[in-house]
Image 1 (spheres, rainbow, N blue to C red):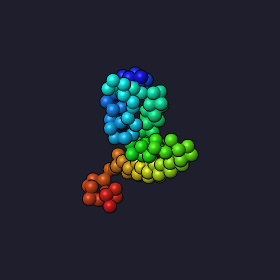
Image 2 (cartoon, helix red, strand yellow; image 1 turned 90 degrees about the horizontal axis):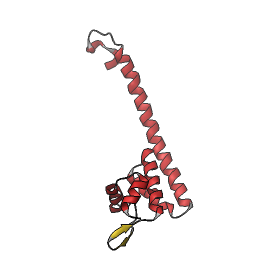
Image 3 (cartoon, rainbow, N blue to C red; image 1 turned 180 degrees about the vertical axis):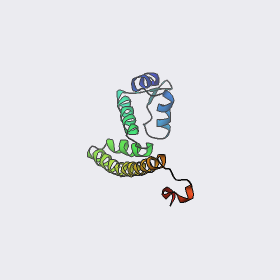
Image 4 (tube, rainbow, N blue to C red; image 1 turned 90 degrees about the vertical axis):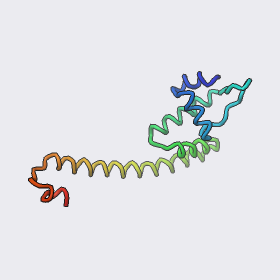
Length: 122
């Protein structure tokens, strides 16, 4: 199928698909008379990329995951490894956001006459 059809089916812009090929995230498709021709497999790979991006994975992490996908169990091991690393990062970000929220809640009710005397800054 042509790139326009893959773009329509995947909800991705054709320019995104070409970019993914350029950076090696997607393999180069076959060409017929100079035009890219894609199999249904590309639509599935684009769905994997979309889901992984929404889960917070970087393109580099997704590239590792897709590279392992051809090897069967290796993909599951890569997925678990990436997920565990990402989970630790997200947990740390949530904890930081909670600390910020708590400080802001206290600051929203601060009645100190002077910031120099405010316990929030010391």
